[in-house]
Length: 397
Image (cartoon, rainbow, N blue to C red):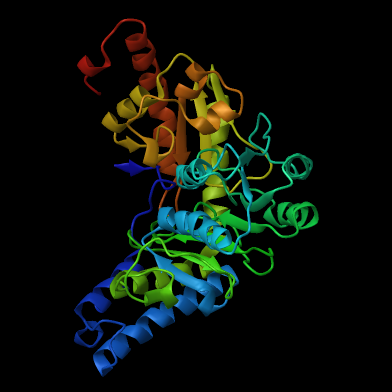
């Protein structure tokens, strides 16, 4: 199988796998990190070593990193946890985000809206760009905004955003607001700098950077009040109850260290492959590449194939041994078109025709050429099925 769906998840790096196995099998690391005996304290030391590695990769301090179960929990903790702390302090506020955000952010914002907090969306253009002028206009129109959440990279389009410039706008027009950045899709693809970007909150996930699934982190200002979502013990300095998974966190730390060290090489590699892919798609009829052509993470290509159902097209490519995505993995299996593509102004039919192709460190030129070779036949099959044929009856060559 040629795997071209790295925005959904990445394969475990062998070096990370070795670190996880070592942590799982080392008898000295089997204690609870909260225990005071030597076995527990060795486990605690492993967790703190990983915390320092994640912090260094993100331009943060170790005490600003709270481990979570992944990017979704980190996004939820950032928005709901910070919002509830503000509410407890008697500070009424609204939220501002964009229609392009990951469902973890939009769902958390939606819950807060149902709890009585006004929710506003900043305008985006037809390429999925968020301009500083649009952000300043949204902040002027919504003077009660207390939390702003914007992603560093879009999970569907692969757009990269000038977060420092956008943060400066927030500091000017809403100086008391907290700024959260969902960096799940940017980590390992772009240089990230929590303090340099003047952020209050930042979310990342391990399995997007060739680390184990089930672990992520929320980076936050040290003295920022965050109401925990999980109640219980005082793990993670009271922000996230539950015994820390030592082996997974250890793997996350190694993956973060590798992501920071190898970022230039990885970025150059996937960018070169993506450019070849875009060139090949441009030679095909009725194919439209979506997103910002200038500011992008490098590995992601979102393309619409007129007259095709994207899910059927992805299934046909799967039969040909190529894995790509129809929209975001967390929303796959639903008949609804991508909200991100609809926010660009695409019709539902055009949004349903799209595929997301996301490249990774292990991909090769042969993978891209195989996809480009398989696409014409797959497109023809799907267009035939859409015209009345049954794609399920087609046997792949």
